[in-house]
Length: 386
Image (cartoon, rainbow, N blue to C red):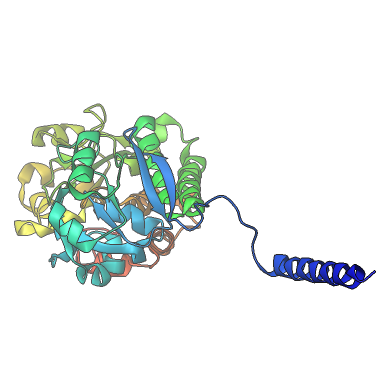
């Protein structure tokens, strides 16, 4: 009988211990197998050259290598992620033809140097800056274009993931696919997938709008046109042109230089005289040359002075868009201006300057048309007296 109190005491003690354990189980996590949740998250990507690249997420520190790469980052709203730039972003340009640089150049100039422009990277400088990833691209079809081998080499030298892709273009479906793929890849890497899709949709909507306005113009009524002084790695004269100039294609104008390929071409001066286009458009980047480049040639060359467009005052200035790769916002701004000049009734609702600033604001975040045009004497989107 004397053992009962002892047994009862032990039972009460056991119950108390179980109760305490039960209370502790509500306030402390259960013991589980080791979790990776405490480790840095990563994202596996297949870049534009089929390379498998693992990048940390979220990205907070990136650098852009190669012509046009930083432009795409600005298009996606990622300019505040940049921690280093190549030499062209730190250079004081006499004339700045890159809208993204006009909008954000002061911010970029203050950043450390990662190497020379056109993708001539300095691995030691990149290591010293310590980005989480290097985004790398280059001009499609040009010697400075990047490739899988270069991306692998840079990644090996720095130990930093390199996400590389071709810049692409809007000249044909294959290069458009490269462009859109690059934007989507970059958007995925920096967590801006929705912005990438919005940008692509905006581009497609403008192309569709231009087609809707001009697609039914009978061939016999399509204007015969030429664009000269087209910039490419610097300013050029009247013979510099683009046979597949997108603004002409999108508004169904007849480019007299069509058929000479899809990229830049230098034509014979005599060919321009023979073609005698109804309208001449001059890339105002030519004004950087001596004697105003193509404009001076139209004024001084007797053969060119005889062109119908010159004699009848149908010479107009368009913005340059080839400046450290293609500035697509300027391509579309030019297209709406060209459409307004050639087919004013079909673009009656369009003010080209207002449209340009709408486009610039969507692409680079700021309306920079006036800033751009002031560098070219106000000749863009106006009739040029020759």
